[in-house]
Every structure is written in structure tokens, then in C-alpha cells.
Length: 393
Ligand code: SAH
Image (cartoon, rainbow, N blue to C red; front, side, top):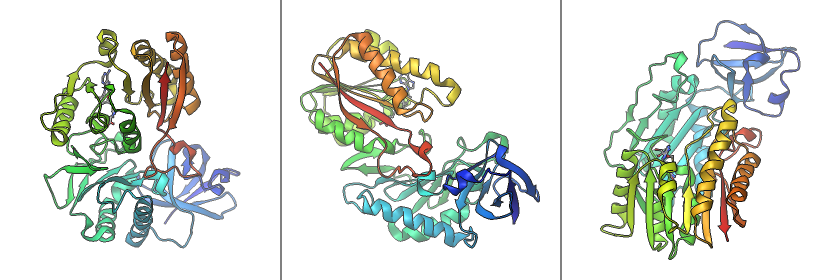
């Protein structure tokens, strides 16, 4: 097996079980590994410390195991997937008659850096974010199929846009197993069309489940604006929560189609809902002050650290508009899913916005990603979703 030797002292983060080796920490290679190969990592004193997938780039190795005797084979994948599944059962999102939409594997959070698997009823959507997970996809799919038994029929592989483009892996989206056009899944008793073929991420934003559920509790009798609605997740929960009216807005016409379809699926013919394909900033400028429950769940404004300043400005501008228009006694659910934006930075952007609008604001809840998107304690970077629920006097 290929070996990687670290520069002296560069094993410290691995000793604390951090799952990445940066390229700058590497002194030399034994052999010439190709992208996606499993390599063994040794300290400068030639002591084994970890093994993982090699890739060209700033993160050179993503650790799969800290155990020298553990082989990375089908049994390895099956064991890791089983551990992940048991956890989802333990927290009640899997094996739940009212819910068959959940994240089975959340990358580093499940000690499988570079791999995401979402379950939508009888279909698993598998996504590789590293060359190694792409190379091992068939073995992983086989292990997944065995581990899940007859609980799933289909495995759809969706990695065309998530792999490092320089590696030129030529990944193609498609079914590895089965092939179903039934794409309706259930989240806490609500039905959703999941567009794994064309949709963003694996087709649905599974990570907002618990926050959507919280929103439902606040929706009663309120006029709701769901900004950046995508599949209409928050809107469907607001409808069930007995909102007076629900308006969904997204700049993408496809998203608006999906939202309308999902509302129709759960509340056919219900006139309380309307959807608009429009830019968020334009809509917020032209809308009146009829809303007393507003959701702002924009796409990641900062995809990289260098975009941080602009991103914070973006969050501030967006939130100012909501604070200016929301009715007295209104509730604002505001989010950031940018990993590069810290909880503190996001909070500062939001409270600056509140001050600019001159509103008196209290924090009711501080939200994050749900338990099926766990944060590996040794990899705090895995915490990415931040939300605040605010009472605006
Ligand atoms: N809240 C959603 C996820 C939002 S994803 C859920 O619970 O599933 C972000 C969405 O913002 C995408 O659907 C994208 O089309 C939309 N979007 C991006 N830029 C926008 C803009 N300037 N105005 C309105 N919508 C925008």
C-alpha cells in the first residue's frame, strides 16, 4: 500500500482524531498514489497514525481509519454504514412510520469523509465529494444494499457536480441499483416529491426537518412568507400548522413548480397558498407589511472563506429588509448554511440588521442542523447550519 510520511510534528491533529491531512503537512510519498487510492499515513518517526483516501488538493488525505489492522474493504463499509443506520434508528428518524426521509451518512460526521447518503423512502441517493468515495462507489453501494436489506430497492448515484473537477473523474449520475420513478417521500407525515435527477444537493434539504417542524408550531393564524422556498418545505409545514396564508418565493421557476406540486400533494385545492418566482431582494422591496412570520433560508452566501465579508453584508441586507417589513409581534426564522460563516459572525450580521431597522428583537431559539447531520466532535468544521428564531416587537 502507498505510504505518506508527515513532516515532524504534523501528526498532532491526527492524534486528536481530526480526519484531514493537509498537503503542506506531507514530507514525502512512498510510491505514487493516484487520486482516490487508500494511503497509509506515518509520522516522521515512521509510526503508523491513520489511513485514508488520497486526493490532490489542499486536503490531501481524508482519514477512514486510525487502526492499522482495519482493511478498507466491503466489510469496512458495511460496518460503518451499519453504525450510521443504528444511530438513525436510535434518534427515531429511521424505522419511523411517519418519516422515511433522513440522512444516513453525513461525511465526517459519520467518520466517512467525502460521502453523503440520503434516504427517500425506498431510494438511497448517494453522493461522493471526494475522488476516493467515487472510486469505491460500487463497493459502498454493495455494502449499503446488504446492510439495508429489503428496506431499499434503489440506489441513485449523484456526483456529477460534487467531485473535484480537476480530477476529471467523468462521474455520471444514474441508478447503481434498481431504478424507480416513484419519488414521493414522507417527512414527519408530510409528502414531498424529491427531484434527485435534477434537484439541488440530493434532491431535498433534509437538514431543515427539525426547524420546519418547529415552524409548524408557530404558524397558527399567521401570514407566512417563505423566502428561498426551494421545494416548499417550510410552506407545507406552515400549512399544516394552520397558517392564515402562506406565500412562497424563489428565484427559480423550477423551485416554484416543485413547491406548488408539494402543496397540492398535501393540501389539494387549498387557496391559502401562493407562490412567486422572483428575486428575494426585489420581492422584499415591493411587498407590503402583511407578514407576521417570515422565513429566510438563503443559499450559502459564502462558499469560501475569502467571500466572507460580502456574505456577511448579504445576510445583513437581507435581514434588514425583513426586519423593516415584519408586523409588530412577528416571528422571523433566519438561517445561514455557509460553513465559512461562524455562529458569532451570523449573529452579528443579524443583530446589526435589527439595529439598522430600529426594531426591538428577542432571540427565542438558536437552531442548528438536525441529529442525522451529526458533527464529529473532532471535526468542529462540520457544524454549518445556523438559525435564529426571533420575536420582533
Ligand atoms: N428553504 C429551502 C432550501 C433553500 S435553498 C428548504 O427548506 O428546502 C436556497 C434557494 O434559494 C434555492 O432554491 C434557490 O433557487 C433560491 N435562490 C437563490 N438566490 C435567490 C434569490 N436571489 N432570490 C430568491 N431565491 C433565490
